[in-house]
Length: 274
Image 1 (cartoon, rainbow, N blue to C red):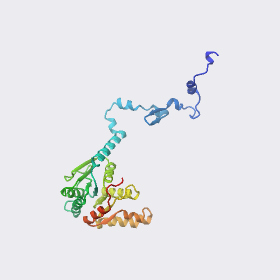
Image 2: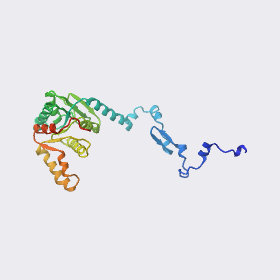
Image 3: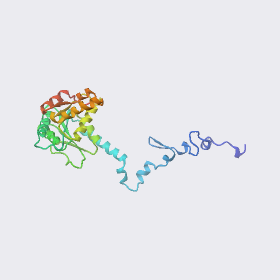
Image 4: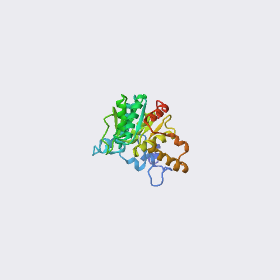
């Protein structure tokens, strides 16, 4: 057989034969496939720069700090810091309430009493670390000789940790902070508050409703303040079928700090199961 009629090597045959998987006019996947870690890139996607190239040859060295992969590392660091700091905290209760509660408010006094009574019942106290009702609960815990924890958040209108926080962690991301509130607490005590307080309240109710946490009491202090909200749930959501009657049992409504601590201490297990 003459050289011009010798069969092509197998790989050459493969590269020139039509691939039935590829539409006419498109390159073969074998010619245009590249892996980037666990990701497989084909055709035009295979032409994107290599990770090492982007790392080592980026004209603006600050650019990567504004990308989502960098944010993932920041988020990871917040979880690691939170887990490492709070792992040995022991039994704790998270206390929520408005940052706008004034020091002469009856709810500020209740917050102090809640913090003190929780420490006397063997619990550390976790708050958002800010002013108002959070400050009151931290103050009560600190003055009672207990562990007073603040989980702060980067906000444009709050001034950092209140002076009664003994152990404080500042977060950039709400969802990382919210995980710590639940993971290291055995229950919630909720004083009157605004959107942030409602956010934490409904987050906790959802976690209990869906079985993500168990043995997790949620106690609201202030019948006059909270009853209209519960009336709306009962009068609107239940008739619409968006929640069930038993969902109302996820929270307990009381009017004093003494009742709140008694209920949460009687119901809370040591460990949330999160």
